[in-house]
Image (cartoon, rainbow, N blue to C red; front, side, top):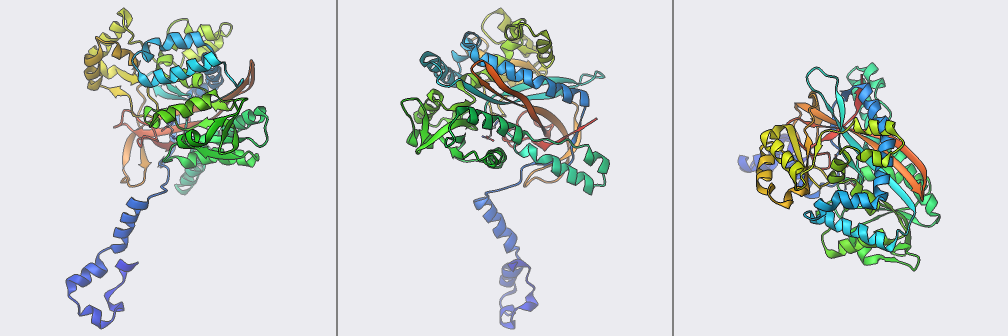
Length: 475
Ligand code: GSH
């Protein structure tokens, strides 16, 4: 390392040069300087952020979250098949939200043409926080369910070993042994593999549909490698690949660059910004129309919108999907926070007044995925004052704010100073299912994800640069 070489290792001639020049040449920390510049310019890989220690989570709520997951899988799947419900639930939203409206248009076109594939693959993640009111026991409340690009199943398959190791080093052997095994990557891949097998063509590939700039590639790779282990060929596709080299044959088989695609696993396409041109929308439509198994298909994507989440909380709606299963209804409903409509009319007006009177009690949510889109506190008033008299307000829903108890921990993130923070955690549970026609072939809960962020941030996940990966330590 250039900057650390001592003067006396250099010939006398050099030490006769002006001391300032020598100082700059040899004492300035050039190596650190260049490595910093190189790092800024060429940074390709950095470690995934994580908490130094696992976070305590009560056993009862953890088990509750795992137990309800297969019902959530069924619910999402049933919603996706109920065109009338989706139409009715989303009517007010698509009138004002262009992105949801475009997705809905594709959904309608597919219904008109008839679905070309009866195999459905669903990989989702239902996210919760623990609501702790005064001395009550904490209660599990759903934040949202992600039915598209539900991430971090790959990395969370590796984090248990990180915390086991740290706890051992800290002399906490007993705690280290209590870190749960977790392998969502294997479970997600198992469902993808099942869909691929049912598709029934050995040479067809599984395509991971990804962004142009892939910041979370390693999370995806862990799922990918599970598929390669089963001798399933995986490719990665971007919008451009599909619109430039994708086509359907006369049986609507999807071919990209001459390869037949059995399964398209969407890890992109959930945000308006992902669709940079009309060609992106054409590519999405092409994939949806194809015989490839889509994960998710367009209807399942729509089933994960915030508006659907709010409509599900209305009295009687869950019963529509589980007419003979009061137990499932009860288990799902127990996880609902208060959710309120902003549709035009007296009920929506009441929601507006309630939010304006006590904004700190609520979260205002637009129909967006990817994290960091929610509105809190005085900003709720600003937004609602602007839109309250117009249909624009129907682009949002209002939800009760959840109050988890902060826990102190260190958030380990590249470039961030090490400091103890008050932290809040969010527990996610991964669901995976495959249906063929009317037959539910598999329906599983395949693992969990604990994410933790500083309580300074009201919103945002790992991908948004706010939360970090964690593990539950059950008590
Ligand atoms: N495109 C990236 C990937 O596929 O890994 C990110 C996808 C993404 O942001 N997914 C959201 C998520 O699971 C759901 S739409 N976020 C969790 C988080 O960022 O903490």
